[in-house]
Image 1 (spheres, rainbow, N blue to C red):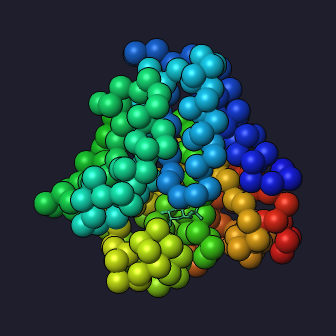
Image 2 (image 1 turned 120 degrees about the vertical axis):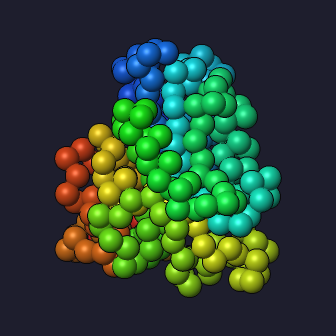
Image 3 (image 1 turned 45 degrees about the vertical axis):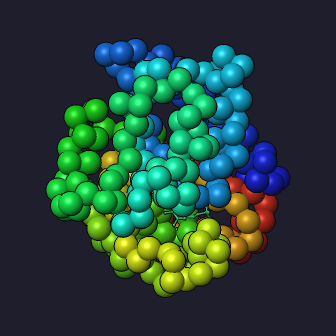
Length: 243
Ligand code: GLP
């Protein structure tokens, strides 16, 4: 538990830097990092960029897999997760663009796209560290309430609560928010060697309580993390209000 979003983000960013540096990735043994979008990781990315500029970290031998992407939004759309990731992280660091993996929500065959994504993760040797956030309903990636805890990368219809929450990025116009997304599954996240989740703000307090004090269940999909051997949840004081 950290005081606020800034100090929670700092903790997470420094944790990731330390993990990558301790791993000492090379061309033949890259570090495989899973990444989220949303407001929660934004400050983490800013600190990673600053650390890169200070030469405290290099992403030359880091491979990334993003959690999710909207279906049907052009990848150059200002609200696509593709755009988000380049704006906040990839354009500012030394990552090789061929090491960046983001689901293509405009692929002609979405099911094949998802299967190929799982195959690419396997080929990379699995995810070393998956960073994530949660929605106010406890969803991780776009694994909405009711998602199978065994789910893998697939097409998902967004829950009304998620469309409502994300409408702030679409000029508060619910009609502009995509209705579907491609997302890694709960089991894809749980298969990572380590999972780090950042949760800040009073609006996430109920979700944090349900996910860590409640039973493991598919209505609060992050509760599945209780079964992971190596999980870290970093929160601010506000998020602890219901604990
Ligand atoms: C979206 C993303 C999730 C993210 C959630 C919370 O639904 N698919 O990966 O965790 O939003 O976003 P925020 O951090 O902006 O609250």
